[in-house]
Amino acid sequence: MAELSRREFAKLVAAVGAAASFSLQAHAATPTIAIQVGAVSFVDEGVASVLDRFQGDAGVNALLIATFSYGRGIAGRQIPGQPLPDHGKPEYDVNFHGGNYAHTHEQYYTHTSLKEIQAPDHPGFDVLASVLPEAKSRGIKSFCWYEDVFRSDLKGIERLQEVTLSGKKAGTLCFHNPEVQAFWQALTEDYIRSYPIDGIMWGSERQGPFGNAVAAAHGSSAHDPLLVTCFCNFCRQEAKSRGIDIQRTIEGYTNLAALVRESRAGSRPADGYFVSYWRLLVKYPEILAWEKLWNDGQHSTYRNIYKTAKSIRPEVEVGWHIWHNNSFSPFYRAEQDYADFRQYSDFLKVVMYNNCGGPRLASYVNSVSRTIFADFSPEEALGMTYNMQNYKEASLAELPRQGLSADYVERETRRALAGVGDRVKIWPGIDIDIPTGHDEKKTEPRDVREAVRAALHAGAHGVVLSRKYSEMRLANLRAAGEALRT
Ligand SMILES: [Zn+2]
Image 1 (tube, protein in one colour):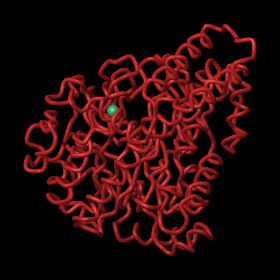
Image 2 (cartoon, rainbow, N blue to C red):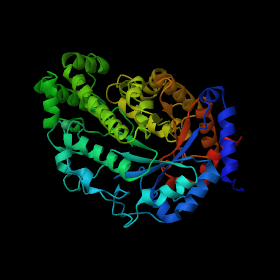
Image 3 (cartoon, protein in one colour):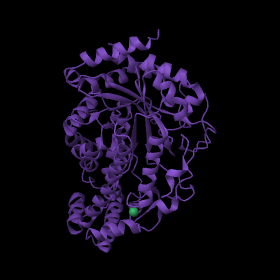
């Protein structure tokens, strides 16, 4: 396919903004076509050629550069064991480490013991210094994209880690720990003061102890309910200030863990599963009080990052990646109140990955139908989920292979827009080649075209092509551009 010039493409994108849907006319703006991309792609393929491809093939006008993570979900090459895509260096980065892919400016990290965060993966390569000038000259916006994923072998990290119900250190960091807040503040300040970025996006794919105890998430069917967090001294202090009885909380969660284990073992209580779970919540309201305490910590992190960013440069756009579990668990969805996000968000990237959404939703229902919804078969739990979440897709037998449809993307886009009102932009996250299991749904160009169109048709202010360029196949990336042109 012949590549369009930048100007031609800008014209086309503007035309889509004007004509694709009635709602888009109301926004009267060019949709943001963002792509998530990690440092390794620029190192492997060169900055200019990556940007040429983004503009020419997919009409990209914003980069979400994975600047900080210890996870392979957004950084690094293709996950070992998954087929390599048709671009980039054709090998796996088995020595992937992660960290900060921009230069770390020490002066900002005085209030946290976690400061040695420089990613060793590409020595001497500063992804922001390398990409920003070229992106800017092409009129592409650049955002730092960083997430709440760590490794446990980092110097100083143990002081920041959460503590489980059973008293062990967890691999996750505690939002009520001042050093954790200081860390996110430091990283945010470092990015905004050190580089002429246009915005930031932060993500935390985690939920509170109740959701984790009942394993209400995809990929969590084997979660040990005794490992829920957080019971560190900072959280205990916070609980005290709220008048929450800590001993009663621990007792409640210990009983909850026992019930989860019995449910998984298939020993049905005389009054049934759901009644037994609900009875426990009534007997120990501390269970939900602690769930709220955890959520409040996560939301105060959003608030702190927002405040830090805006106090330095008010024009910087600040937004959040909202975890896929928002589409599955009604408990998690209840805790993601779009109206609350209005207070500290310029945009939300709501994950609406419809391809991997099939296997993930199946994984979720298989998990909860062995805990809090154990009165129901997995198929029945799926039907209940469709009713609660207001979308309807394949049967459980077909779901992992079929994925979710563009109709799901459209419905979730409308829901997000209705939730945030006028002030916050919605950029649905569209999945392109996110790895799935051997027999499970793989992304095809048609899926991408339909999902992008569905999001924009529903009135989204843009889309985020996810989750990292280094795992995307080019035909699927081009399909995003095709959706804009036709
Ligand atoms: Zn804590």
